Amino acid sequence: MPTTTKIRPHVLVRASGGRRYVVALAVDALGTGLLRPFLLLYGVTVLRLSAPVTGIAMTAGVVVGLACTPGVGRWLDRGARSTVVAASMLVRVLGVVLLLVTPAGNAWLFATAALFLGIGNQAFPAAHAALVATIARGRERDVALAGGRALRNAGMGVGALVALACLAGGAAALQALAAVTGLAYLAAAALAWSVRLRARPGAAPAADEDDGPAPRMRTLLAANVVYVFCLNVPEIALPLVLVTQLDASPAWSAVIFVANTVLVVTLQVPVTVLTSRFPRRTVLSLAGVVLTASYLGFLAATSLGDGWGAPAVAAVSVVCTLGEIIYAGSATALVTVLAPAHALGRTLARFQLSTGLGLAVSPAVITALAPHGPAALWGSLAGATLVSAAAVRTD
Image (cartoon, rainbow, N blue to C red; front, top):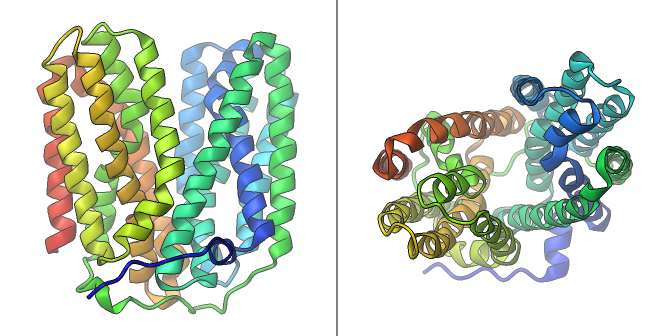
């Protein structure tokens, strides 16, 4: 009979890389929260670039950053751990420096800065997961990964609030925020590097006995592309639906986004501990079922129209966030367990590639489906997610 895992705070900190590394994660997240949500505004306001040019440069940075993940995986498989994490932070320092020296109207230098920021953002998740997998085993590793995600969301939320408060200062305030972000990344890199953790090449955690038959990695990666759409639902799908289909106040979008952040920060670790009673594969399938139910709930909520539609969407968003929490607490953990001993880094890099691909295409898919009505948007997301959940469970 499976039992609930109990993780004490000091054990969680140790499994997460130790105090210095946890501080590095918090500082890095704070810096990301200061700049990432407002990078578009920086290009438009400070550098006086057009919105389309700024958006294209940012997208190119993400795409090229994804192309660098295989190299990160090979570096990790040679045993590097804290060095890769520190490098992912340092490359973003370079991106911030380029932002600060870019003259107004120079789109190419801005694109280069966005490229370095994109490389760092895409390299970090695989490097962090590999580091935690080297230190911790079993369910402690799962909870440590969940704790890192909660800490990262908290730091980014605080950073975004600070940046929002500074926006009234205009271009000068945005430049100051960028400078503070660069210093935050530099401090985080120094702390991460000081951990000085390496792994013996080929030393990776073995599969737990209670995980049952492993799904094929290709199936898991393909399913992950669909699952990860849930991360863009609060930021893109719901604001689009609330404003264009329900004529609701933009305040509803803000409420949903804040609630999503608060729920992830407060529930990620407890929910991961609770679901640790069950095989990771089963939990990941459950996440798909919960997300499917939420998408169908959004379909029903939008049918209520003006008045009750917006509150109903906000209520259903809690279910969607719960699905996101279950997904985030099981997906990376399952990948670290299933990865071949000699290819942990490359496997995590492929997983990050599938995550980045889903995040990259989901805005285009969501905005393409939304004009065709709620059934096209939510029905398609529900169907694709349910198929993915079934594939993970039965493959």
